[in-house]
Amino acid sequence: MGLFGSLFTGVSGLFSQSQNTAIIANNIANVSTTGFKRSEASFQSLVTTESRLSTYSPGTVSVNRIQRVTQQGSIQQTSSGTDSAISGNGMFPIKRSTDSGQEFLYTRAGQFSEDSQGLMRNAAGFILYAWPINANGDLPANQGDLVSLVPTDVAFLGGLTRPTSNAELAINLDADTIDETFTSLPTAPADFSRGLTVYDSLGSSQTITLQYTKTYGPAATSSSVITSNAATTDLTTDLGLLDGDQFTISVDGGAVRTFEINDVAGNPTSGGEDIAVVTIGDIISDINNNVAGASAFLGNNGELVVQRDDFTGGAAQTITLAEVGLGTAISGLGLTAGVYTSDDLAGGGSPYNNGAPGDSPPYSQGDFPTPQNLPGDLLYNKRGWWKLEIIHPDGSSVTNGLLNFNGDGTINALQDTDGNIDVALSSIDWGNGSEPQNLDVDIERFSQFSGNFDVIFSDQNGAELGLRTGIEITRDGIVVARFSNGASADLYKVPLITFANANGLTEVSGTAYTESEESGEENLRAAGTGGAGFVEPSTLEASNVDLADEFAKLIVAQRAFGASTRVISTVDQMTEELLRLR
Image 1 (cartoon, rainbow, N blue to C red):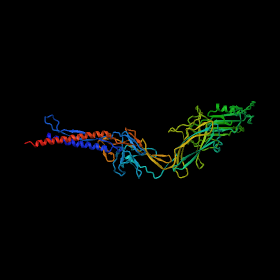
Image 2: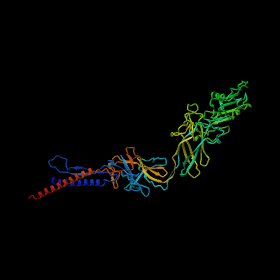
Image 3: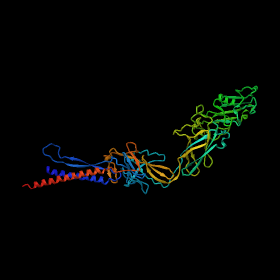
Image 4: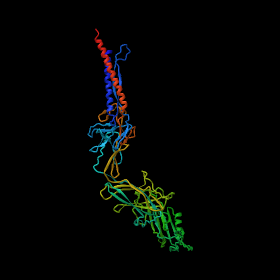
């Protein structure tokens, strides 16, 4: 057996080295193939006996192929936005076609482009599969399963419109603007207005107008009497009120405080009054010190303003002004007797019914942010109230509401659950057949400082109709469509498929692989998570074949093959010598 066993050993050497050469040849042939992963020959000895007998029976050699799928190839830059290489672990999920029953394949060859039907295919013709992204930017709930993947179809029969959902304004309102009374506010001209163009669901532009009017605070009434030195204005000699005239103020229907006009000469009073007042300054001082929940001050033009300060209760807050007997003290001051009401402004509930008695302007405060600093807080500014009215393109009112500014000029408003300060408009009907539209106007950067009205900037996220100009794949694996109007749409998210042993995958034609028992089951991972790598946009992964290394191995294989042929020829000569024995 020894002589013929040596012959078989030499033959096995020839076969193994021919296999080694074939593997090397395949590597060299695919040195320019995108995403190709080289293989190596692994030799193993086969023995015929494991004993230590004096007679030796030679064995043979076998060869196995080892794939180097996990070995990273070099990343090369390209000019195509849909070319994608994977930096790190993972493979792209692909199929030969969209027909049912087609198995999933996996590849690192990311030279994708759009075919005639809008499907993303690589250079080998395989279709890229990915998670669809819905209108809210969410992925499928079952994204851990292959059945959640769909073909990446980027075809658009038309263009894309982007209806406006958010707008942002930065505006300064002049703090020195003259306040309007609530009696005149519904018909008073706006102190400042600014148009904002937004886009509806049909891509049509719609211009809404934001009108700002300076006003007094909750449940306020103001005097029509204006003097250059109002605080020292004498009620009898300057305004002509009668000595002994009385009026009352009460808050929320509670204790009534009575004021009597008392001439500086000190005429006898009629009795029953809580305070005798001589000047407008006396009235202001007493209300601020003795009427809880109310305040008084001089307006920008010297007018007397009386208002209900608090607006934080669960029901409407009121301040009541009434004449006593036949006196005309209130009308003599230029005020109007009656009940002035404000609803729960801080609660954002009922309409804000501030105004003259019986007047109920439709201030839908629920659309507006809730004040953060309330009466009694250090920053609360009772002089910082503005009416904001948003006008529809047809001239009708979309909403009315009140804004308050702190003493430092910043907007007095609480952030919502998303951390924003918005005027929230809902279900706007543009009257052109477009869908009812919700629109959040960010007013966080509104301010009130003395000076000019100034629009610092305005912006919104809508866009008119645009045609598709390109497709690209981002580093996070997002397939993005770009449009001529500057809009973009996230269509799909490409997962990266990882395996416990990627080197155990079964290779198929087209630089692709199928799952095998040795590779383990697939795991769907978002790029950059769970051990998966990243998708490098506008790049391709080159073959991981090293030509110098392959040529060196080829030389070794050639010498080993020649050595095996020498073994065979030597055994042949020895056998011939045996046959010549007589």
